[in-house]
Amino acid sequence: MSMQCPICRSHRVVSLDHAKKIGGVIGTVGGAASGVAGALSGASAGAEVGMTVGVMAGPAGVAIGSVAGAIFGALIGAATGGVTGAKLGEVIDQRVLDNYVCQDCGLTFGDRLS
Ligand SMILES: [Zn+2]
Image 1: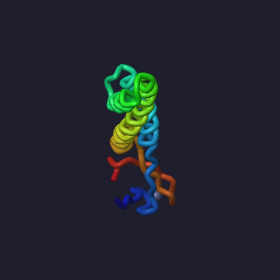
Image 2 (image 1 turned 60 degrees about the vertical axis):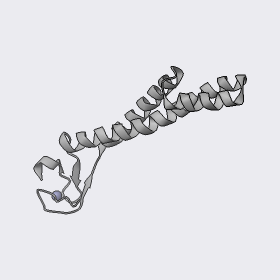
Image 3 (image 1 turned 90 degrees about the vertical axis):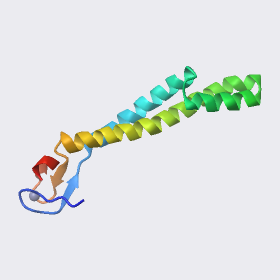
Image 4 (image 1 turned 60 degrees about the horizontal axis):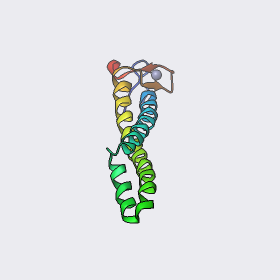
C-alpha cells in the first residue's frame, strides 16, 4: 500500500502501528494467562496434551503432564492471544489513531484524511 502525505504529497510515509504492537503484547500476556488458567482447570488443548502424555508415562507422569499442560496452554494461549491482540490493535490504528507519519514534513495523519 502506497500512502501519500496530504500536505507535501511525499510518498515517504511510514506507519506507526502503536496499537498493533501494544495489542500484540497485551494479547500475548492475556492469552498466556488464560491458557494457564484453562490448562489448570483441564479445559484447554494444552491440558489434554499434557494429560495424555502424563497418563502414558504412568502415575508420576500425570503430575508432570499437568505441568506440561500448563506450559502448552500458556504457549497456545500466547500465540492465539497475540494474534488476536495485534488484529484488534491494527483496527484501532486504522480507525482511531493517526497511524502514518510523513518523513519529509513530519505530519502525522490517519486513513480518514487520505
Ligand atoms: Zn509531508
